[in-house]
Image (cartoon, rainbow, N blue to C red; front, side, top):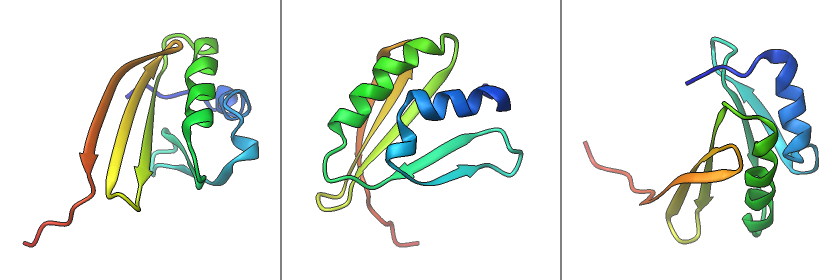
Length: 97
């Protein structure tokens, strides 16, 4: 996964409107992966805005995991330059070991 330069991460944050929605912003232990978590009744408008605004950052891949805890579902969107290039669906299940 490519790293978004630190000076561009804030631009991404504001372009995606995360200042209005974000509860937490995380970075991995190498300080390379930007991740935000939000809690909304409906995520449709926010996801549409992120897809649209991703055009401003060509060459970067963005991944959205949309969790629906009530229905035990997760949708993963892979976005590049204003396009959803892959959309995956799964369930949130624990397996006994």
